[in-house]
Length: 433
Image 1 (spheres, rainbow, N blue to C red):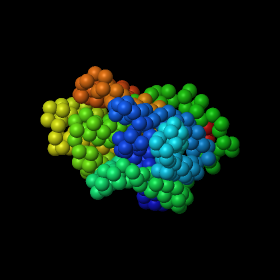
Image 2 (image 1 turned 90 degrees about the vertical axis):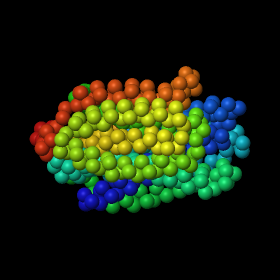
Image 3 (image 1 turned 180 degrees about the vertical axis):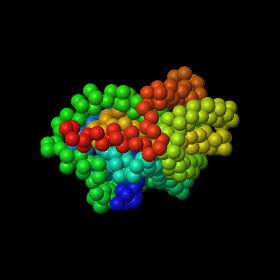
Image 4 (image 1 turned 135 degrees about the vertical axis):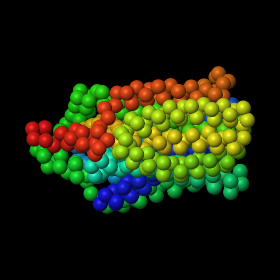
């Protein structure tokens, strides 16, 4: 069952995140069809604003699904979420453009993105809880890292579609129908995800919790805010730096390279494919390493190293805008893989079982909304307003400072078996709780 949970969670999460992120990878053509403007920069800003607005729905979706998962189980929540994501993605794939239906086109895109955001809001907390609650003692970093493998796979799949379609189709074919292909195929995540998630059991820890309590608690949100404020702040800061790097490296830099540096789109997407695929290995190794030496000892050095390398490589790219130098910038994302591996376990194991999905979903989605969803928009605006093509570096530096606060607040479980984390996670099922 552990093997089945890892496989189904990774594939299901990858399909869900593929649907959510592919919008950003096709931002340029979506801007032209749904947000036409005489100024291409304004058109792109409107598209990235719509990309970011979906993240406003994520905290609400995270709360709804997080509370639901803490009351009724991780499995049931995950099944509902993946069906919703299929609906939102399919809408974008079949919508008429602005030229056909006018202002209704961008409004419908906005509605579809809100549906996607609401669905994605609960995914991380519930899926991470599912993985670490099936993990054997001392292996939570390794098991939790598969959550990030799924996200790296999603970026690799999205970039692969973008690369093949933009490089193999004529510009006219890509512009008229090619860009719709990944959105229409994304509808398939509904039945596939339903099958995968229905085939797994509820987690042992949640089953034990349900067996120990006579009534379903009605206030997980109130309880997690009152009882675990330090843990909420810690988790928020950790995800802030990771998500800022993720959306700058995985979504913004590709568009930045094309619009600001006039590089070839297909070449930029190819680099994203390669380094996203490599990161599926890096995150597993770093998650396993954190089981041996502790979460903070992996998270902190990776963050500092990324800031240094991103500054050096982006400066080099701006001075000499070539595809090779772009690949050096994209290669910095391997340090994101080191940071991302331990993150799911680090953020999830600090909450008890009865509040785990609610706590993680709440802070994860607030951090992603503020530091991830708005990252492409903010960086596009910064570069456009200041004229400084190095502006994304300062955005990363700010996010890294927030992350370091979280690393300092983090209460490190003992590396040997993470016994303390196991004790805290089981406190809710002790007698009298």
